[in-house]
Image (cartoon, rainbow, N blue to C red):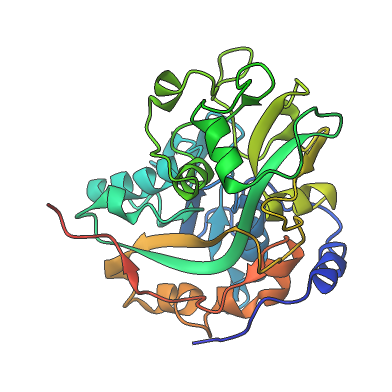
Length: 327
């Protein structure tokens, strides 16, 4: 298993600048339909798009990565596989489970930005880490909110106990099902639930039109008092043009005294990000070649991983994280 550690921030910034434009939102070119259709997380969609273009087996692209946002439906195979577009980590894993249980061969893998394996007990899935991300919070460049909060301060904002919350602080969250929402709240010591904003009414997870807030979109920050969880890797991809520019006036905060540097190993909310596959598939040559072990085709593409702002994961390709048995 590879033990390569995270690189220096400056080197990563230089690598990011090498990519001229973001990868396509959905697979283009040949083959039109790939052996492995992968859906889910907004956080890792662009890096997986890039890896899908870079990973070849016998000179052929074998992965097709479908964005979390876009048209209502996606078509992953030539016939019988037009399905609703999964819009989050949770929706992606659920789509994978649905496809496996239906035996329709429409979805072969899912992107997940959090370890939500416990939510899929008995589904026989393996969560394979492939990169490292870190989260902080974002505010507007003209914000009245401090850009130097601590975990305790941020928790008090998101559980509505901070003085002036709802007035001086207006916290936002991505939609339920978002892996980043789940990770962020857990790191704050809070429980992620579908009715979180009912329990804590100072927090909002829909926009002004009542539509669910998507991950890592800075244009939701329409008020100088807004605050929003944000992936450092995605922000880097956005400002360097490797992901669609969605940052708007967002700037990242120095969280717990740690600047939001690229690949900063001291980041408080550092996390593994995963590709999720059916455990039964790991014995098949294609899955083993693409996903498993430090010598897998994905893990070998460290240049692509760092170009999209992520860190190299020393446990890339590990198959130790599996869903628990059914209760």
